[in-house]
Figure 1 (cartoon, rainbow, N blue to C red):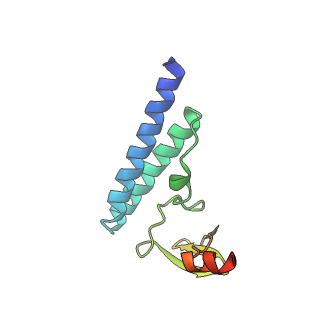
Figure 2 (cartoon, one colour):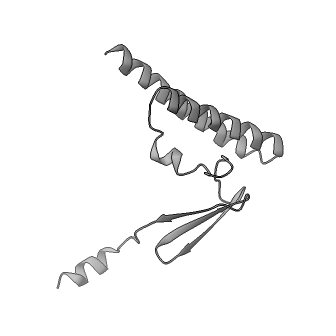
Figure 3 (spheres, helix red, strand yellow):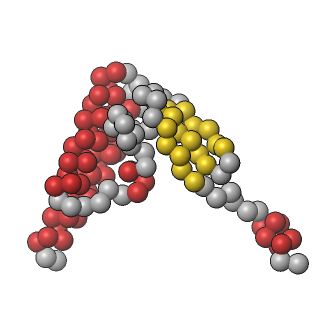
Length: 114
């Protein structure tokens, strides 16, 4: 492996590890833990920018773009569905919409092919 590939691989590993630590802290559900979780996510974003590694989509979608906290339903955000979208509302008031496709049942697929 080239040196640049190794550096990016290590950076991605660190980003994932910091995300795991942020998830653990946010579940403690107190103010200090929430601030520590935000700090972990800020460090992960800095690593991503510095080493030019894109944040994995699963991680990027779970970070509030306004306050930088980890969106965890029931702890610091509410989730509702409306018209093919999942709507996440953070405690800071920022709203994120994510499109989803409804799962089709095997019976519906078979009925449509007749």
